[in-house]
Figure 1: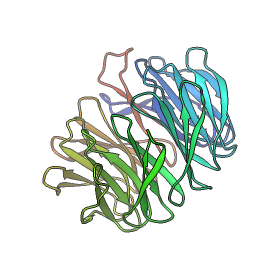
Figure 2 (figure 1 turned 60 degrees about the horizontal axis):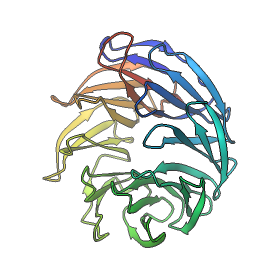
Figure 3 (figure 1 turned 90 degrees about the vertical axis):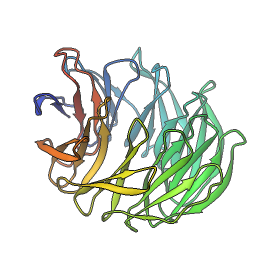
Figure 4 (figure 1 turned 90 degrees about the horizontal axis):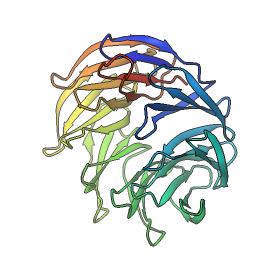
Length: 337
């Protein structure tokens, strides 16, 4: 994993997390980074101040994704190879329970109210709902084919899941624990993100090169908006004013103004842009480039690429933590494939 100083704009450290890193996330309230190493079946815990790996926690086979409880005390890891979710005690840095779910779990997202973990099971097209109090599956819900990305309303009432195999978004009532609708969007919906108030859902349709907008109250979709080729990831600005779209096939990031539905900037970046994240102040956008093995640093005020920082091959994810040791703005942690 490469650690990039966002003041110096250079790699300042490398942390060995394991083979086939697929996801990275920052533990809430603490300067710790959790990196999922799919090839080794571990989650590495990195101290953001020293960049040292503090622990390697064995989980299931081919772990893919990690998320945290709102208080940061527990982490939940979807293990796509063993059809399980590992529950990690973050203080003791060990697995305290392994929960069987459906086949090929991709994401395991914790609801904002801290009541459920929502798991997308890609191989049997179901959603597993794990009760966080009992740490057991409370319901299994059939959804669209090949569910993947998950978004949950701020009040925890609904989940939206991409069904990549059928070009749909499945809408699930998390309180009644039932499927409400399979809503048609574009071909191969790859990512989705909610508007900050939860009123609208944006869906990136990879093979339609379009953006669908779904009203989360009525579950109705407006006319799609054109993007660049093969939109892969979406990110909303903290103030809810802009939506950023990485276009994997046309090497650009689009900046949409959400209120007007128009593109206000098209930013040329590196080869095959993928994962996106913003610094906490929203002034710097970070873009991983799968094809050119680097990290793009974009200044949002001017919508311009500042520089490219070389990383390891095929970066897949990026997270930002404040650098306590230097007092600088932030450090970006980026795992490779």
